[in-house]
Image (cartoon, rainbow, N blue to C red; front, side, top):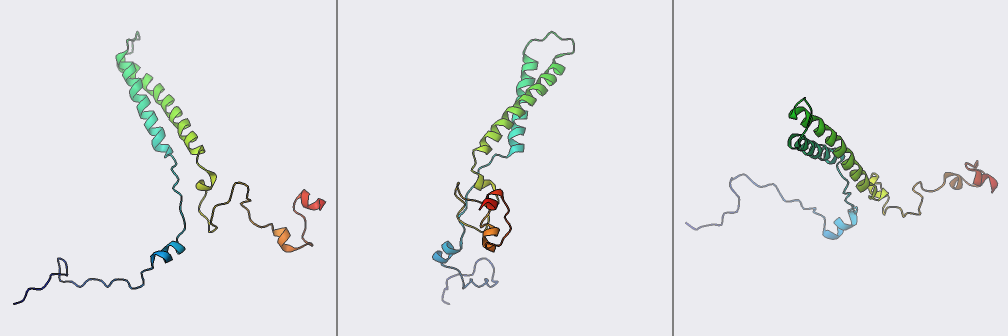
Length: 147
């Protein structure tokens, strides 16, 4: 009995046929749309991290530092922790907003069919409908009325 190469995998079930119309690399490049990765902060997580870190720092300050109140160290730790949590949330929120403001505007908008993205001096609206209609169009801005 001759030994044959085992080519079917674990089961004897037939494999699905390979797709015959797989596009070539050049065709994939032609069809693809270039993408930009927007590295925006996740506001809820960033602010939550600031609140948590602030609460932990405040609670530790309330527990470890001497106090002269009659309510006890636990209550002082909770109150100081809540105050630090508020401050930590506000500081990290401001940091997240500052990071998000550095993101270019064209990365924040939804992708459109037009590519490449508009240059900073280009109008995002497109052609003026009044100029497309001809000279008999009603002026829509004061500048067009003067013409």
